[in-house]
Image 1 (cartoon, rainbow, N blue to C red):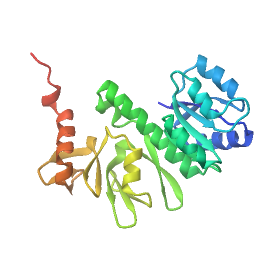
Image 2 (cartoon, rainbow, N blue to C red):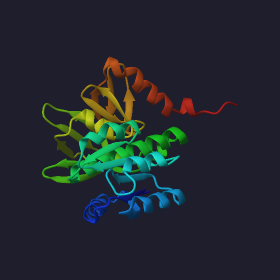
Image 3 (spheres, rainbow, N blue to C red):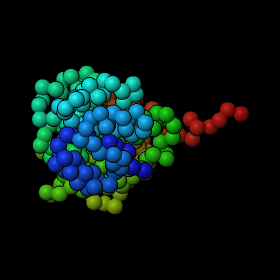
Length: 247
């Protein structure tokens, strides 16, 4: 499953850059790309896309005005060289704001956020976390490269002093300078749960829970009192007892 998107910028070079970034993700599916906001508006009136990447300052119609003109806009990521537009953009409930020149790592962070939002919405609408637990992936930057990790691979994520360590089911570990809070914001909350201030766990990988610890992939991780109720609720929601239908 890929995420459908529309690219809009009056600078063709920016569109070329975005297309190159999209090709690296293998997550986004570009349905259309425009340099004229009026063309983009006509397209959006006739077609559905999940995400709109739009420049702010353009002839005829600004990106902000374009979003305002749509009765049911898709998820919106605004792009501009002028940070003063950020507040107005967020007042329109855009999900991210990219400052130009747009770097690859910042673009990938936006893509991770988009994927997390869409998967969370799907979990809430379908109520079926089992289907979603293995779907999708995210990028991290480690050892001067971007590495794709699938959600189903991740056992747990641990905050260290200067790094965050991602532990996968095959025994590998990946160190990244992104802190645990930022990673948590980009992951689907329906699939990952905080068990401790230093640990984020894949709920599909939890093997057992007690008052003091959570067992994941043969590892015993601490369960903080602050997080115990949320973890227990998540486990109950996945349990056979909860799923039984009334006779």
